[in-house]
Length: 88
Image 1 (cartoon, rainbow, N blue to C red):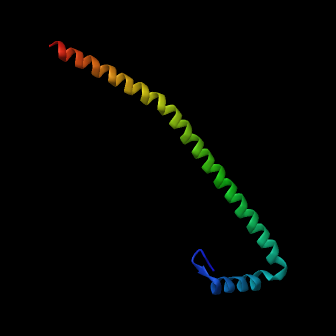
Image 2 (cartoon, one colour):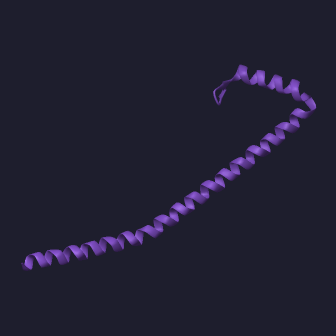
Image 3 (cartoon, rainbow, N blue to C red):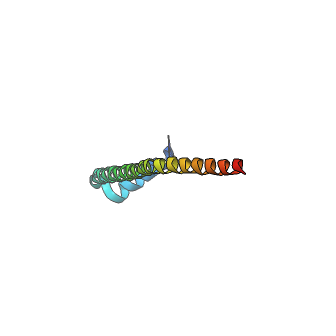
């Protein structure tokens, strides 16, 4: 068992210290609070990631027509230049 680079012996020592510091009555309450905190952090992280993905998708949609128009304009300009060069 290796969680965040901490092995089983280290986890055992941490749990024993927590038990000594907070006592057996307070420890389950702290565990619940820690679980709720981690859950809310994960939810916030997911929401943030979803917003970033949404903005990126909107930018991709917005850029696509511009790049198509830009390519068409470049092609038309190139055709004009080619036709002018062929006339000379």
